[in-house]
Image (cartoon, rainbow over all chains, first blue to last red; front, side):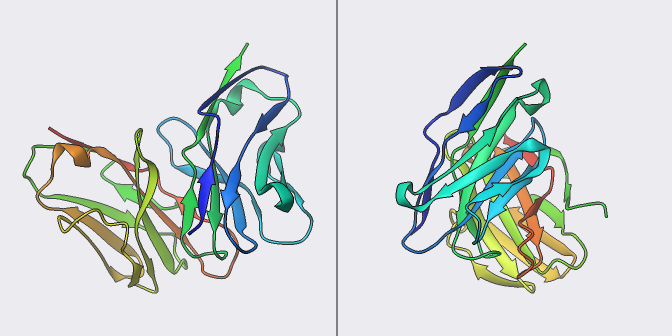
Length: 113
Length: 114
């Protein structure tokens, strides 16, 4: 069965600094990978997704993620964070595009002014 | 589009009472998912429907939980009887199968069982 590990429960970065959130997955075949963001009191919003093709995918709000098969990773990056990026970020893996997907436990991002 | 609509936003109930959570998916979406979020367990998939038919309910914790989707625009998640350990935020999400667009989540229902 597929699974997702987000090793960092909390990450704190200064505003304007670069960001990388880690995600490792476990799945025997090529997975479908997602990053979602959740602001306090809100549902989850899709940031970006990887299905196939170019391993570097661009998303909304200036985020990007890179799929590395050899490392079973799909890390999320942003070159310069803004205070509004403070939220919880979830990596997720699916067997196919629209079947059930499994979420990691999330990484809470804190931004220092 | 109004997005996925969940009601109520907050629910406080006493142990043993029946609780019904409601979800209206995005018009045109044909897959619907119910998730539960807690600090300890994160996001857990409870059940999902495709074309109003339950496809996988292996995440439903026990018989006290049941879900229905009588038509394409409405789904319910019922807990009877409720217990304090059911306290969580319950999310509904929908998507159009094959679109590759990902899920659209509702704002959730925060359930507190006292």
